[in-house]
Length: 312
Picture 1: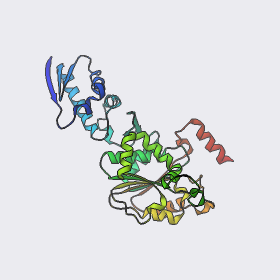
Picture 2: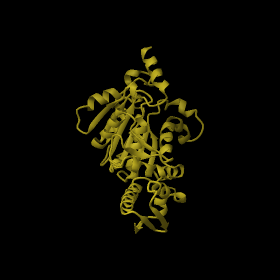
Picture 3: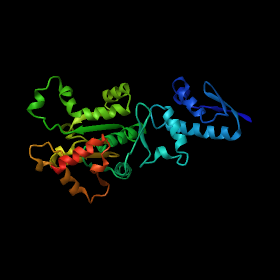
Picture 4: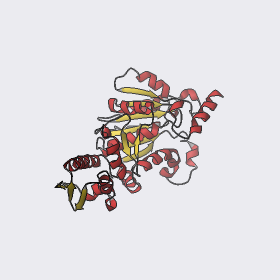
């Protein structure tokens, strides 16, 4: 039996201990024979040498994880012990954590195709993710963008969708421009709301760190150090898609998602999504991920509904 003192340097202890010391208690629960007492920036340990050594190593990993997300939770502690054979799990792609939601639960790829999308993000600057509703294309794209923002790999997130009814119908909706566009952009707000605390999300949007805008507002811009996501791209024509793709600036990541079976344009043949994929397929740095019905991760009925409509 021996004693040891760990001193937390250059970090607020509550960021590691958690509210009411919940994170520290979760960590200590894995060492029933080790006595740990937190006093300000110091943690005093009393127990077996091997327990002290392992506790210190896990605490170091927890501190490193804090650098990649806004808040730590007991889920983070649990994750450290569930994946002891993969200590670098948090930084990998594939089946690893992309980002943590507001409740602390990890958001990660849920099937092989989503894993391919995550892998493609790290290896390419432009990704097309195409497939039926419910496959998590947009959700994974936004999770990757939030991860990049938290890791300071980018300085802003820009989310855009074509407002298909951008003509006279929009004009009859009440409110200012934001009020008119919000119904079209609500799915993007929903995904962001799962990953960023409401108050922080409002701050990000107020300062322009996160921008949500209709596709028409992209014209003339050069988007540097940004993760830019075009959702519902099947509702763009080829000219609009070209306009969007040519906004790419230095150190930018572009993700284009869409479902070619849900074209809302008056003339379905005007959709530029599949045409754009064909034109860029041989360009290095561009990758297309095709989702299928079996990749649907919503309610089990969704896959059956999609299949029934396809057969009809």
